[in-house]
Length: 237
Ligand SMILES: [Zn+2]
Image (cartoon, rainbow, N blue to C red; front, side):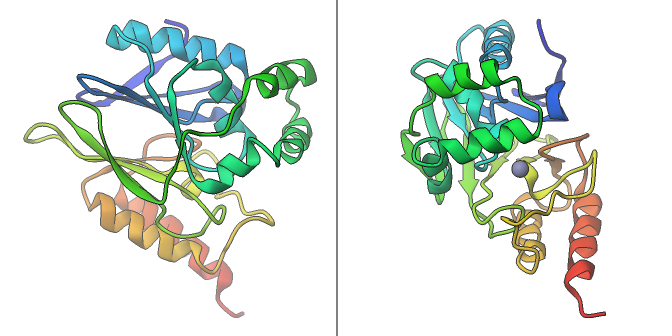
């Protein structure tokens, strides 16, 4: 095993990449293995791909990319013919917008050679998503855009439990962060962000495990507190 994987519930895992502490999620079905986000470089992708075979006995068949930031999408070049799912904005970022993605990654210190190797292999996603359920065999997952926030197209993945007494898992992308304050930049929609988190809480419920794009797994009260922190930043005065 190259990376440290946490088991969140039956067949649902996540690891935290060393570079930028990016979360990569994994949901194992009987027919398909779904990856949620995929890191920045081909070396990260190769380690993830190897580990998925180690954990599940079969390769990644599907990759979901939550939003267009480089650390969540450029590793998609390393998963062969896996089916790629993303919001339309990610498709634009991986094609006509790749120069902007490259510049953003360089500002964060990504090695230029590793960056260009990944960029040479990226392709447009196979499916653009607004809301869909994916059947992985024995379980299905729900993909949805709960509303603008960190970006104008944050996609979340809701994984219902397969057995009694198990917990729903919600992969939040960067709508939720634990290892730092939420990343607000020029592409963020601060006034809308609390509403997106309301929808996220509605999707997951009070007892879900919420997996942030960066940082430790949190619970509904943490998400609610982050929602209130964001709401306070937009309030007058
Ligand atoms: Zn981001």
